[in-house]
Length: 312
Image 1 (cartoon, helix red, strand yellow):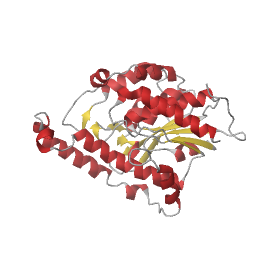
Image 2 (tube, one colour):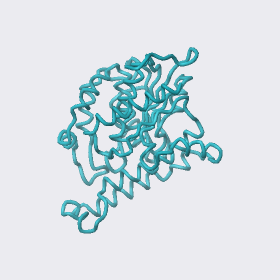
Image 3 (cartoon, one colour):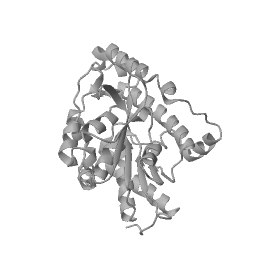
């Protein structure tokens, strides 16, 4: 049990939970550590898996997701995958949505205990889309829609995909919600390097930020290329083409591409708008779809939060 701590001054704490697929279970451990330390967020924003976990936190139902993930096996992960190949994504995400709807409680974002926002990306314009009102399931499902993996979500006339393409760790979003002390959790920092914080420091003096619509106008092109690749490989995918050609699987291609985009973008954005506390769980060895390694991720999140709190 961590000793209780107070954020300096009468601050409104905001929690920004980043994208990262299976690595995002580390958010659960971070939240457990913050709770033990007596730190409760007044605002929460999440991207992708961060939106998924964040919704449980905002609804006061963290025990539901912690109990579920702690017992998750490889087989259970597989049974939650609903293949729709070769449409606009490999998976529909319906089974994940069903679990979420059963466990979350409130149906509308306005009814949550803590103000909550999700981040998605408009596939047509490349713009960041922040959702703070309306159906929780729609907002979270859109934020989770990794291009090429999950089918996009049509919401209010916009085709939405994973928010990690535009804002992987939504520090600015939770600030705009009213937070004046932001705790950010980046679960991707150790994928390619253990020196992410040093890289952020270097970026601060050199980075030039361009308009999001200009920088990420190629999101749709990325999606189209992934879809074309999937269609070309459909017939051979199930005949051992990976062994024959010694190429990575399609999920490896997609996940690595997303990792590259999100790690670089996170470094840029944290350089421009750094949080008051940055927590970086060491979960780089947990693969894109290794959701069964939840215990490891949660423990890594807890340790990282403990370290960050000790340095306050």
